[in-house]
Image 1 (tube, rainbow, N blue to C red):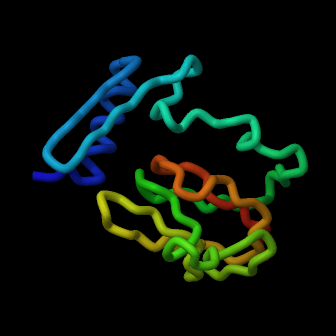
Image 2 (cartoon, rainbow, N blue to C red; image 1 turned 90 degrees about the vertical axis):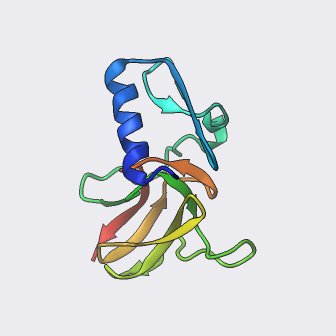
Length: 143
């Protein structure tokens, strides 16, 4: 029986409350390996950010910007398929129902709507990166 999104969230919650440094869960067709970095953040070994992926100093930090956050744990994709143009770019106008990305969970592609009206001012994640529930994906200047 495959693990659901809720199962994975519950595993991560248990690991977080237990304070474990590392956990590996493996079932048929599914593998989860979590390692905490020194700051207590859960990351996979391949998710360590390189200096070029750090937030740029020119990125808007205004408190009035709205966040589009990941609704689930999965892999963030900016386009519908490899080689296709991204759903949105910096400067793209969005409405609440505008699809801004896809989050893949266990081979299921989940479209993510903006949920807000405005203009994309920052793309917060690299394409094909693992994201958790609540991870900022985009910053939006409200309309």
